[in-house]
Image (cartoon, rainbow, N blue to C red; front, top):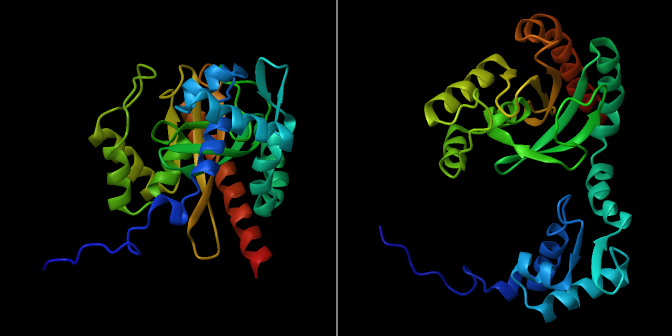
Length: 267
């Protein structure tokens, strides 16, 4: 059956629904990072693909709004930029409910606990309760890691329909992070499907040498996985057997408790 060609209404021009200047402003904000915390106008333009004039207009607008500061040559983000991220956190009361349960879990197991959501091929940390620094990466709220090589990510990917999981896998860049990293499709799919069947995921040093973790889903009242919770440890003091036998039951108790709180809160 032939389909009619798209009309202008079906295929809107960017100006109809897409505010290009706003998108460019977000690109400028995202160009700043730990390795590029301060940038010249030329560096911002180069990273974003904007002209110097375009980058300058956006930077000065952000400066007027208080999100950027400058010493005439170097530009940097201000703490006000955190308002954008906290807007998401404060709009999701579930994190207020989850934090006390996570703190209680950390007190019991003496390992760090994190909550994350899925965004494309990455997980985004939305809550962290620390005990020890276990990764060379300085993880904080808003930090991102590759979903396919984290226990949190595999639990979240396991909740996707199979067709969507396959679609994301097809676009996945491959990197051998450690000697344990699984990079072929068959192994990745097998491990994610295991997480789906089990209702939890155990990960052994696939993202960083010495890092082990176990994750479980957080579900809403319809049974849909909306986030994941994990415990992370160091392999030299927290074996995989200990993760599974000692820590996993307590993690599952906590994830189930948070899920029940969400159901009660939303009734």
